[in-house]
Image (tube, rainbow, N blue to C red; front, side, top):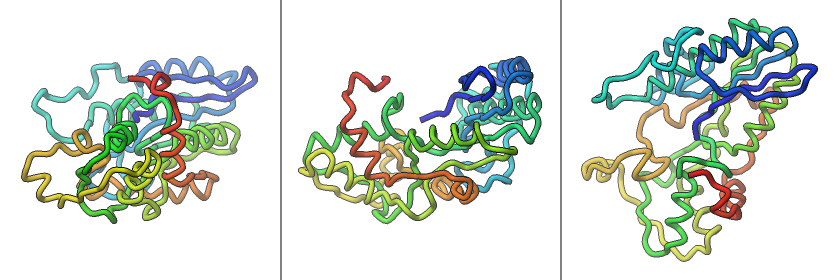
Length: 262
C-alpha cells in the first residue's frame, strides 16, 4: 500500500494533505502559522538503497527538491529497477515539509508494506482470495523468510501520536525485524479462510528461472536483501505498537469486498 499523505495539528484540528512536493511545500507554508506540528507520511521508497540494502533512518535518501513538480524524476520506459520516480517525489515532499516547518516541528514516517482494509493493491486480498479457492497453493521461497508488513491502524495510531508529540524526527514504520515470517503469514491466510488449502513451497531459484514476477505475480515475495531488513527500532521506542500479522489477516478477512478500493 502506498502512503500518500500528511497530517498537521493545530488549533483548528488535524488535517490531511496528499500532494506532490511543490504542493506539499505550498500547503505546509500556508498552515504553518496556525499548525503546531506537521506529520508527513512518506515511504521506504524514499531511500536510495531500497530494496537492495538494509535500512536505518540515516540511510541516504533519493534526490528530490522541495519544489519539484509532478514530472520530476520520471524514469525511462525501459527502466526495470526500483520505483525511483515515486521515491524521488516522496523524498522531495519530505524536504518540502521540513523547509516549511523546520526540523523541530516535523515527524517523517516511512512505512514499508501496509496491510488492512482499504487496500487498493491486492497484496493481502490476493492471498486471501487464493486461499478461499482451495487446492494446492504455490508458496514462494523459504517458509522461514522474514517479512515486515504493518497494519494500517497501527500506522494511523502512530501518526496521530506523533501529531501530539514534542520535537521532530524521522521514523521507519514497520513490524520488528524477525517477528513475522512468510510461512506464518500464509498459514494465517489459510486459517482465516477455512484452512482447506495446502501450501507447496517452491525454491526462489526455481521461480526466477521460470520468470515468475516478484512483488506482483506472487504478492509480498521479494528476494532483494533489504526488502525486509528495515530497522524500525526508533519508532518502537517512540511508541509504535504493531499487532501480530495474523490479527491483521483475520480482521481484513472480515471486511466485505465492497469496502475495499479496487
